[in-house]
Length: 141
Image 1: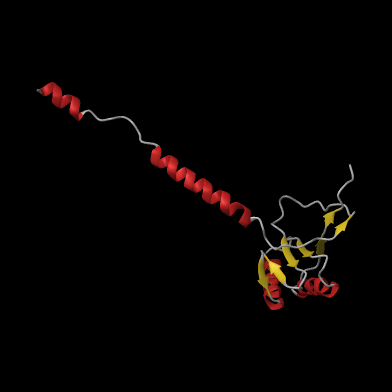
Image 2: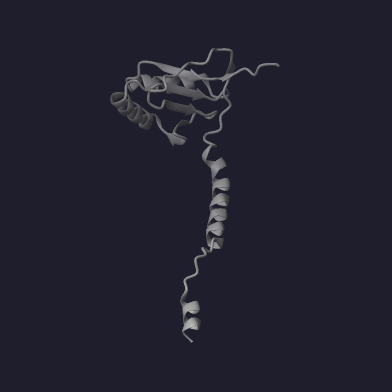
């Protein structure tokens, strides 16, 4: 009778991995659905130029990018902002990290006045140098 009890009380050394696989598959599906949404940002059509790309110092802080869409709306970090909000945020960032690169991404359908206004807002915030972002012309290979 004691042999039966000893066999019954032995712990089973197996791990049931089925729940872990289920959780992993659910997380995989969630990441597959959300990843493209995170990289969308503001849709703009940048003008194309033959200008040489600017080399950025890898040790410098992340650049401040001000986007101007075709309707003239300004965006910082893909969030719509008015002129005063951009001015306040850019001035605070420039005071804290003056080595930050300040860049303007203007849609090629945006009015020249709107892109120029975005640059003036950054200048009024105390930023000394403002650069424009363009796309390179595709090479015809």
